[in-house]
Image (cartoon, rainbow, N blue to C red):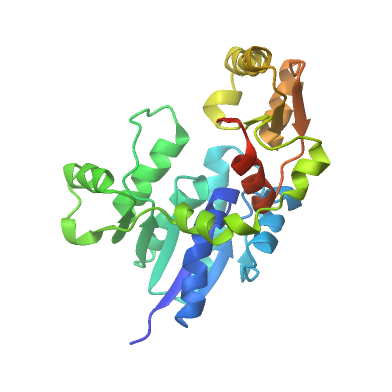
Amino acid sequence: MKMKACIVLGTRPEIIKMAPVIRECIRKKVDFFVVHSGQHYSYNMDRIFFENLELPDANYNLEVGSLPGYAQTAKIMERLGPILESERPDVVLVQGDTNTVAAGAIAARKLNIKVGHVEAGLRNYDERMPEELNRVLADHCATYLFAPNIREKRILRREGIPKDRIFVTGNTIVDSVLENVELADEEILKKLNVEQNSYILATMHRQENVEVKDTLAGMLDGLGLVQKRLSLPVIFPLHPRTRSRIQDFGLKIPEGVKVIEPVGFLEFLALEKNARLILT
C-alpha cells in the first residue's frame, strides 16, 4: 500500500533542513503534501528560502503569524487538525524544536496519525527553553525518531523509547549545505563591500538571548569587543525579534557592527563560507 505523508514546517531552519527530504519524496514519487504554519511569514524570513532551494509551494498555509508561544501552538493545532482529518495522511513529518513541531506532533497523535520526528534526541536539559519542551514533546509523540547521531539514540533509549522506533540518519542540514554550497551567492560580498576572510559574521535571535535586556546588552557589548580586538567589521543580519527588542530596550548597536536585513539561504551560505569568524 502506498504511504501518504504530510510534511509540517514553519520556520527558516525547518525549510532548509526539510528541503532534502522534500526533494527525495519528489524523486521517489512519494505521495505527500506540505503544510506551512506561517510561524515565519515575511519574504526575507520565509518565501526567499523556498525560492533559493527551488521547493514547491506549500499546499496549505495556516498563517498563524507571531503570537505568544502558547497561543501560537494552540492556533497551529486548531488550524492543522481539520486538514489532517480531511487528508488523512499515514504519517506527519516534523523537524526540530519549534512551536510548529510540537503542535504538529500533538495534533497528529490526537488524530491517531503516526509522527516522524527529524532531528530527534537533541537535549540541553535546560527546561527554561521553550525549544527543550518542544523537542521532548515531539520525541515522545513520535512513532519514528530520526536521530542525527548515536549519542541522540542513547539519550532516547535512556528515556524509555524502544530501539525499533529510533533510526540514526545523520543531520539533513549536511545534505542541504552540500547540495547548495556551490550555488552560494557570493554577490553578497560585493554588496556589503567585504572580502573573503576579512569580516566576522554574527547571528543572534534565540528567545533566551534576546528577551532579557541585560543579556541582550551583554551580547551586543561582546560583539563590539570582538570587533575591536580583531579590527574586523561584524556583519550582523538582524532577525525581526532581535531588532524589536533592541528598540524596546533602547539599546545601541556597537561601532563597527554592520546591521543588515535577514538574507536568503544562498547568500548566508556565502557569508558563512567566506567569514574569518562566525559568532552564533
